[in-house]
Amino acid sequence: EAAVTQSPRNKVTVTGGNVTLSCRQTNSHNYMYWYRQDTGHGLRLIHYSYGAGNLQIGDVPDGYKATRTTQEDFFLLLELASPSQTSLYFCASSETGRDTLYFGAGTRLSVL
Amino acid sequence: QQQVRQSPQSLTVWEGETAILNCSYEDSTFNYFPWYQQFPGEGPALLISIRSVSDKKEDGRFTIFFNKREKKLSLHITDSQPGDSATYFCAGHTGGYKVVFGSGTRLLVSP
Image (tube, rainbow over all chains, first blue to last red; front, side, top):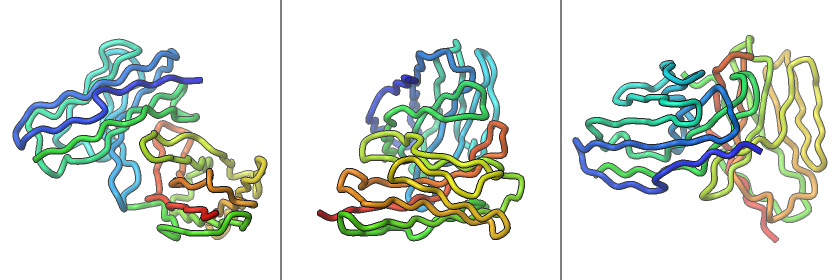
């Protein structure tokens, strides 16, 4: 079964702060994704990648950068955090981009 | 633009009853519909899925009914158990990278 590990699990920062969320998957999946989850909106795709060095823009990319350094590691960067980015963030992976998503346990981010 | 809608937002049933969760979509190119189950403090996990060539998919106590003409689906959970209490997300998939999630139904099964 796919293993996706996110860190940190919880993060508090101030408006304008710098935040990096980390994700590692250990099942050699090609695709990795960053979603945010907000009440009333379900899960919304921020960025995704289909391999090391690749980055694709999702549906709600404003204010976020991402980088895929290896096949295993995918990072989400908030360089000037705003209160609107307070959310629950999930990383996910999938083998082909056409099949099951395997999610991490999430990172809860609060921007004060 | 929300292309996948779920109802109700929350649902409470008694243990042993059948819970019915509804989903509708707009994009006629969707051909695959996974349902994800999420427990508090965890990420979503695939529960059951159906492809648009089928009208029904069963897996134990969980059944998806699919009406392509009306662009509607429903997830039936028979003999509901307290352990089924979770949030359920319906999603639409075109076969490419993009999965569109509904806003979820929070199910509570009371003993």
